[in-house]
Image (cartoon, rainbow, N blue to C red; front, side, top):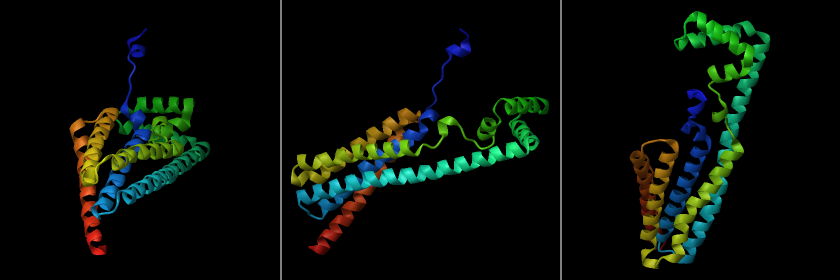
Length: 234
């Protein structure tokens, strides 16, 4: 077996589609649900009201995330399909210009003109559309938009994230409800940041700090708003 075949590589870029949706869904589930619970709790609402608000936030958020992710990624997929269709027409109508375009792309990357011409000829003869999709449009199989996958990942991870602060509500004493939700949520955000960094091959510290900072800020703001509105209504 050659060294090339023995040297199998696994890159984080292959996971970027579902990883982005999963991290976004879980992070939003924790932050939005915890912030909602803390805000309602700060208004001196009853435990049952807090629980109902949290449950409503979970289901509404999960559906919103799924729908938003599906629409967003579908728009990306539509754009990719339109670009590929246009490229296919151009290859059929003006193959020589497309070959020249591919040659210039390789030359711009530092390939000698004669070699670039030879490579372009071989690529055009092998799979012209794939070559132009990859080298001209920047599209590849691992980066292809997958709306259903993104929507499902977002909905499931949002639900999982939102469940963490929500389960704290019936288990905590009334006087400790808000602090308990904050502590559990920040701990979950830190774990999420670490997992996301590990899966994506990114530095651990900045990822953990980023998600916990914005989560803490969101909960602090909603707590202040809940307290102000609770006092005003009271």
